[in-house]
Image (cartoon, rainbow, N blue to C red):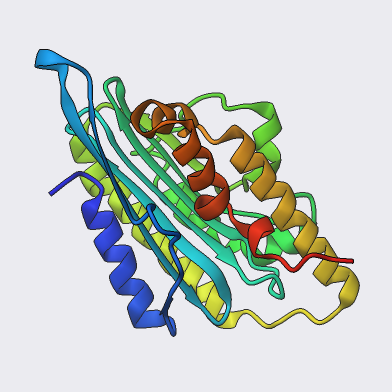
Length: 248
């Protein structure tokens, strides 16, 4: 059992309980990828598996799970809503490297500076965020250009203790995901053409940023080569532009 497997198992079970879940197509060659890295005594095996679903209100629910031994564990779990809902993105980045654990959880807003939007989607989850501050303190600076994509309830922490991940981080992950699915249950479709265009623009702005700045790019390049990596990023992890109809 790897460190983040319980997170993935919990998420998939909860999604099945609460949504009309359907498979989301994973392009050939991306459902599972294996590599042997290093040499001699430092040689290790790395397995990356992909999981993807969709539902009437959620365009893509997807996870990338990297298992490379005790010093390399990653679960990137993201939910992208359908473009006719103003729902935020759900983002969970759970990363274990030789130096420790890097944890990021958030419902990433489409419109960070819109006070009505914050009242609708951020205020209700601030109590969850505040509940975990004592055990999961702020993890320090992150890029200024990225701040526009995170909410005031962005849970960002570092730890060297596996037990913290297995208890407090896991509990926070459950509560954030449950709260997100509550938002999904209440969501009503948007019909105003201007609002629909602003939602699409927000999705593309976020996905382009994430694809360009993906922190896993270097790791995947090292394991699987640049060709596989770029296709994985643009053809699966952040695939919206590939999926959109071409506008004349």
